Image (cartoon, rainbow, N blue to C red; front, side):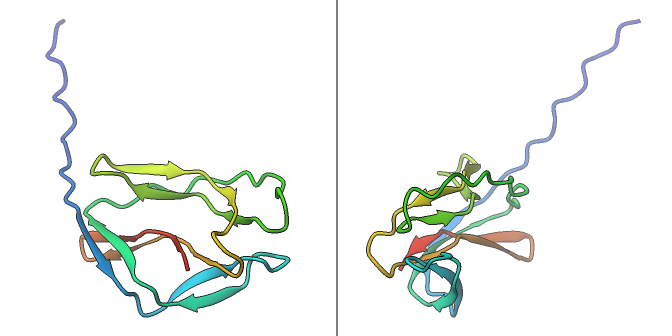
Length: 123
């Protein structure tokens, strides 16, 4: 018995919009403290991307040895990459751009049928 091949999977169109906004309050991690995990608030401008597809589930991080007390661990995250979809950025140690800099982790918020992605940045 011969049958036709199944139809291709439906393609889902993804719409993106990139804007620059100033969030009211976003959490961050202060660099230079012994535990590197103090949470504070920051309000600088940030780049956001709006897409109609949720990011995949976060992958587990394998935390390697800290190169020196000056480095801060940046947890892995999904980022939107030039309209080609989400790309995984693995967790890694990073040297802050200057002493006392604070890393504001990227985040994604659902807004109706869209998802607003805020890029991570140093303050």
